[in-house]
Length: 309
Image 1 (spheres, rainbow, N blue to C red):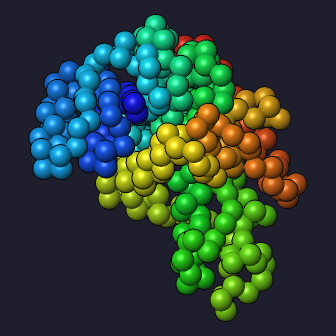
Image 2: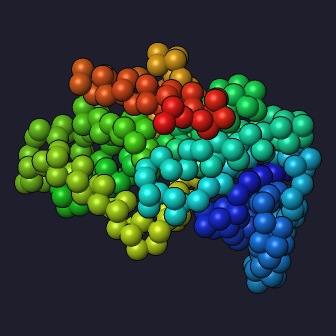
Image 3: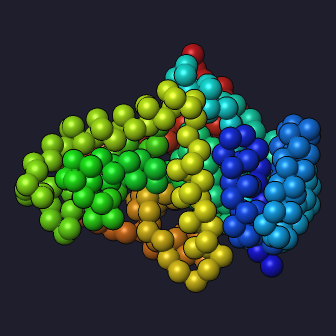
């Protein structure tokens, strides 16, 4: 039986629940939110949708105990409107949310895979792992997955090719110390310093274009949802199946003594083998800087959200 839990029914949580139901990816879906009326309304809406599709996902509401034998728990709490003030504005709020939900998740006996969407992603993922006391390989954040996709799309648009022709990763920290690892990027197997499809690809402009995609989305919608949900669905399919998915996610990396976004193979056990690619020295230093920034945020969370200001 495929059982998935979602904590947090904002834009992303609702869209994810909808897609899981209409694609019949879950036999049971556990929905949890601080707003009871929202949870009830979403369940009713999803059940009405099932009548048109003849899907049979059983939807359970506000029941932490039902997470006991869930395969996957997606944490999607947060308030993206806070990002209008500053990048890390959700840190204290979401840290408090972790402290509220973790004891109830632990009490349920949940022992599956956690996929965290909440921001700041790497720090909140690390804090979730500590509070849930699950093995690090079972607690993963979406990290720089979307940043990597935007980078590849920026390269592809400039080279007038499909993004499927582009490989490479963004490391570090989503919404923070992002590291565009150009040493890992190839187009049809060629390095970026070569002429690609008759185009010279300027790395600085590519980064600007990739960041603009995020700006346009947030300016127009106030949040990112479709891309996040699409990638989370791929991760869910990978975990529930027998395949592997390579992407840059927030994982525990011993060489940095903490969580950081790093290209990794995901599989049915959660985190598989990291992809140990050769980075330029400046890129390696930048990843260490990101890891240090994440550790500082984790320290704030461990202190209960208090800062020295």
